[in-house]
Length: 349
Image (tube, rainbow, N blue to C red; front, side, top):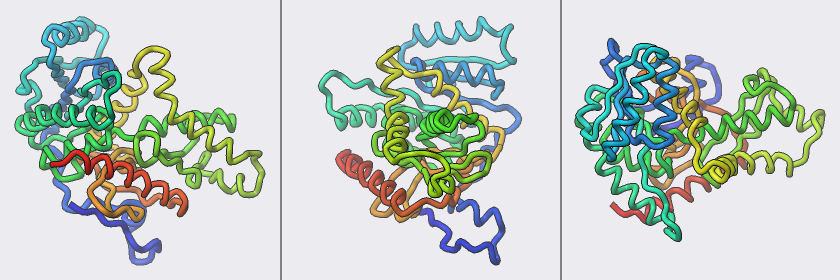
């Protein structure tokens, strides 16, 4: 499926919503299962359980299903959550190694993934994860043909592409968690630098969830006031090195947490729960998540998933926000796409 970007920037003759958001073409309708909301999480490691715990405490669903290949750990995690029933909103919690437990899910969240062995190449790790996804995605589609599929496993952009290919779903129903958390870290660091509240900062990291991500400095605003205006007029003291340092900190945040505690989990849990809320409650919020980026900002040459500011609702991805970016940022984004496509090409069919 191809997506196209609006060629006109004028509001003349256009609905305002059309000017702000580029719709996803040939999208399928939202899940018809509205009376009973269900999420399935595949993978009950640290990330999967952080997501499960956050979803439960935020009262997002009526039913939560867990799937993992390790039956004893899986049962232990299920019982541990069930024993907290008196302190949580009423939610049915089930778990199984059999994917039948995921039947009729509105949202399936995949966190499972192979860990990198010492000395193992990134490509070999990716190939092992592709093999794992070939066992995960088809049964999810079989039991929940109308669900939205969300990929959290890394490398998230390529594995979102793999999940899309394996599922046969339209692109609006396959989402990668992408740079949603990176953007939260970005907002926090910018807020610290400017001494404001992070909730008042509008800022995005787009592109690859990784080293080639792109910080959209041109689009940062504080309470609706564009920061670039102040920077250009030198009303806020700054150096280009300062901006680069902040972006580098965003990229290295996860590495630091992993170095200190061995893994990341809680921030991912909150990030993914925010995406689930926007989808299941049809909030139509804008999140930087991994979507089919071909056709946006001059990205051509192949089907590649990258994070772009996307509007999320019951139908999954409703469209991509037409966020103005500088030519330098667009070029960085295209380089990010090239990086992903080169690695993707090595996977074969």
